[in-house]
Amino acid sequence: MKVLGIETSCDETAAAVVERLPDGSGRMLSDIILSQPDHADFGGVVPEIAARAHVEALDGLIQAAMAGANIGFGDLDAVAATAGPGLIGGVIVGLTTAKAVAVASGRPLVAVNHLEGHALTARYTDRLAFPYLLLLVSGGHTQFVAVEGIGSYRRLGTTIDDALGEAFDKAAKLLGLGYPGGPAVEAAAKSGDGARFALPRPLRGRPEPNFSLSGLKTALRLAAEKIAPLSDQDVADLAASFQAAVIDTVADRSAKAMALFGSQHPDLNDRALVIAGGVAANQAIRDTLTHEAATHGFRLVAPPQRLCADNAVMIAWAGAERLALGLTDPLDAPARPRWPLDELAAPVLGAGAKGAKA
Ligand code: KG4
Ligand code: ZN
Image 1 (tube, rainbow, N blue to C red):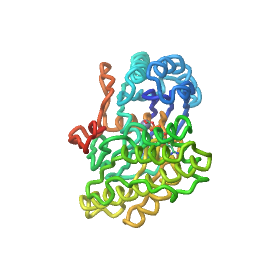
Image 2 (image 1 turned 120 degrees about the vertical axis):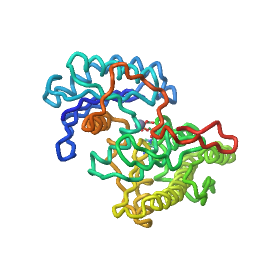
Image 3 (image 1 turned 90 degrees about the vertical axis):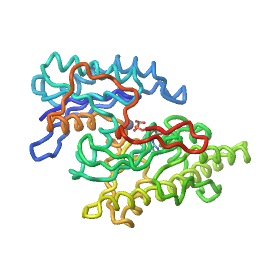
Image 4 (image 1 turned 180 degrees about the vertical axis):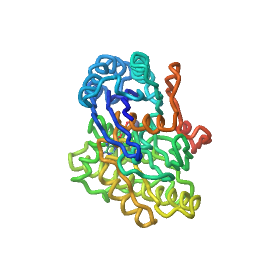
């Protein structure tokens, strides 16, 4: 089964062709990602600029992905596109384009949840069997999910305020490190002293595997204001101290999530903790989780960095997994700005929090 995947939910325009073989393994035939550079000047993604850039780039990218796979539209078995959640203008561009290709080629459409794309990547890279525990950490989402089947997700924990990637981005902005913030903070932290500033480890020890990150961000700001103006070494030390607090927090929260998942699946022999989403590219977080997972009888599955950040291979793969089960979508499938993986999960509100990010 060959599936074209299209991803346009944020500031990456991406197209890829993936083949799913009868034994359930996957093979990438092409993988094209165009990162939009224009947002750095604004310190964040500007939705309207992103949507227009998707319009300009997408046709060419699809052509390149098809040429790279050396196939024609008639060779496809389905066309998959991100149908949400994300910036709605961009989602509409990708989904509408996918519908056009589906109509023109007479192939079925698969409207993919972007988060399901992240969640299923480990099945493409490592042929992981269900169930497994997922830590999804991106710019807009931070949650533990029990992945029990295609379309079968139970949220075990979530952030009660900021997403982890958002916290990295805000920390970078505060320290004058630019956008996107995650890679910049990680790089600055390398030459810093992570013990110089005592920043909080929010929710540490609490049994529910939730996150709270806004207090950490405020503590970082106060620590920076106290010693301003900042030298390069101050910035490095602040970045390192911030990342140290994040790492401790991720380790502690993951320990609770693994305990919870383990208690819900007492007979499962091969226990896997998967990390996905842009923040999963962070090497310090990967190293910490490798150790933490081993301590709790889990193995860490971390897809290669290119497949952790937004890409179209994961959308094509999720489309292929759905197609294999006959799960295709009608041509009026809606674009959805919000689309939680676990539609039944209740909101989790923290003290003073605006509300949970699903
Ligand atoms: O999954 P993703 O590419 O897009 C969303 O769907 O949000 O995640 C982007 C997020 C950004 O907040 C970015 O700062 C963060 O992932 N990120 C990182 C690293 N690389 C990207 N955060 C920490 N360390 C990194 N190396
Ligand atoms: Zn993403």
